[in-house]
Length: 591
Image 1 (cartoon, rainbow, N blue to C red):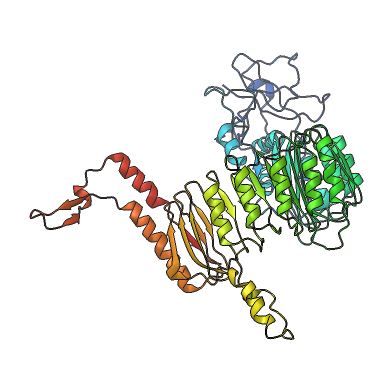
Image 2: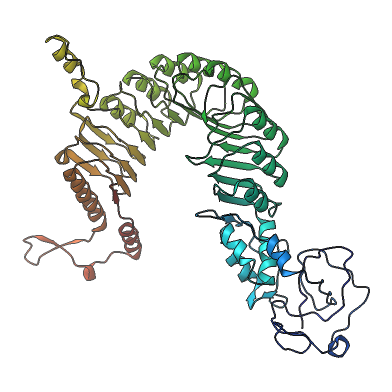
């Protein structure tokens, strides 16, 4: 049984010479059996025809069809010149560099989307079943996929179907490629719904127009920029793009320093991430479906963005917000009051970073308005242990993550109190909270003899602090930069990630880690003795959990000794559990 050759017709009015169908991927002539390369067949079509054809058979214009024994074979189209196909599938004078981009086609497991292939009608290309070829090619990045299209006609057709079926594309755009590269790739993916671009060239409004034209069904777009790339998109251009893409649900963009101001109106947008924002003159976000918002401003003191006015309108224009992240040096207590007045009932995550003017009064306003928070990030604020006490009194039954890095007024007592009063806590970051006063600005030499001891005594509580944490659910703990930490004792059975980077004064003899689930310990910038102590303790933790062999008393009853493996009567479940523990060894990361 011969299988028809799938094809893409170049024109609906093309005339075909009816010939018997050939097996797909065959390199031999279908009439005389000789190799096709450099071959001119002398056998007439009528004498070699063994399968009757009908002159009324319609022209097949679809890319895919399944051959069947009950159907007459369809005639192949007139072959286009190879040079034309090669130009259509390649990028002339463009450097295609794809270090890590992937073509995500996990939603398409069949070589013919929407159809089922049986063993009798399986399509074969180049000696490989179409299903196997599909599974191989779908795992290739775009550059290799373009190269695979030049192997043979069967592979070319399969790659075309892969491009058309792609729903997600992650691509790195080199500096010389620019708009031509993006347009050539996106026109191959009409079904694209998720696009992620890592730009090494400048981004402008022309790029946005190309994406809007080539991806009509786009739902998610992420644009990240390298250090050399410049994002030239303005606020008006971004607002028009969001308004035109009515299916867009997620927008993430870096390098937004040229926005100037924006008005975003969309009924479908649910996630908005913008970074490197600077001096916004006007900010209007009218997205009733928005659930997650992240705005990171540049860390410049002359930033003139009015955060109070921007936050004040969120309650009316974005009533469904669940996650808010704002990083700006202009965050203040007035901004927090405007946020609490917005009355966002569904808010579950609040992150206000780098706001040095956020105090314990701001914490009181937050806990009084949003009592169901699951994650609270006040890194870089000026809250003290009293603010931690208010947090613990309100969020005992809800809070899963507490991030208080770069808060100089917090001591080890406040950290211990938080871990003791928040039983559901799984993530905690206290980096740079317990600092060595020698690393801070010391008093000037011109000060009097009495002022120097007083200044030192005021900072004495920051030195030689010890931290004792016992928690049953804590999984990640970060103490990076806590150079004032002298002793540390952790009893956390679920802890799997511990960050001790730059804990320079931590005494190796005063370190105790009782964390059997520990997988990663970051100890960059620590002294060698401390690193050795960490390695020894994580090894002892593993051995203590691993060795659960029974003890056996000697015949004379003098002492108990550890029974060898072959005398152990433990069940198979215990053996499996021990093998799992052995495979999960802890890694000490030292850069």
